[in-house]
Image (cartoon, rainbow, N blue to C red):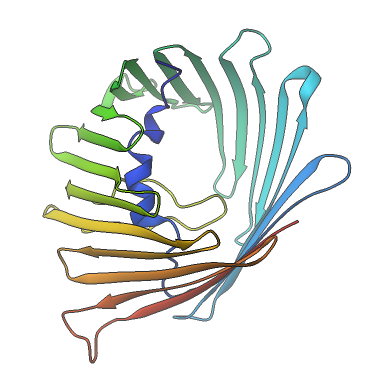
Length: 296
């Protein structure tokens, strides 16, 4: 087996069916470009339909190939600033070292990752007076994956939490299961039914929806279900043609999500989406969104 994914990437295929491409209640524009000097820029803007608040962020990334370095800076209109220096595959093949810092709120982290055939280790520690250590390990054998993760409060010598995951994957299907702290669990299935159809199912208890952020520069994706109840979600993507697709999802709260994405021309993609409260079609909290992505 090749290098397995990191722990946060486990179950990503199914998770993306429910998270990506939906932006209810938001007008969104993304733009990605690269300068002649090799600096990559990514900017995104949001306008909330609920309170008319406008926000955005700007990210720049520069790679120094000879040194194996990647420099990343990100700034947001909510007055936060993020910076990261990362080195990968230079000191040793598969080794990643990084320093990151953020202002408002202030935080600093040292990150390390080491990946080889059949395993992927990831860790980060806060650089503060009361550091928190997060670490995870994923092992792969043939088509099977297993992962463990833990969180330690080093300053107070306190074990804060744990998680374990098991999975199975091949070219057409991925099964993922996760248990956190003995009371929160998740199970998901991704299945590529054909060249045109991707389908998935997800069951959650105690937290809902996989707990991963949205795409880079986007706000955190909504959870499917929540609280301590069991949540059930079904989703699919149907590729109409090379440049267009339809998304659909529904959960046990009878919230129906629909989306349409179309490549308008080279470098320009438009999308519309909606989340409908099917329990109250007349007066329910229906939310609609529009997105435009530009790349040049």
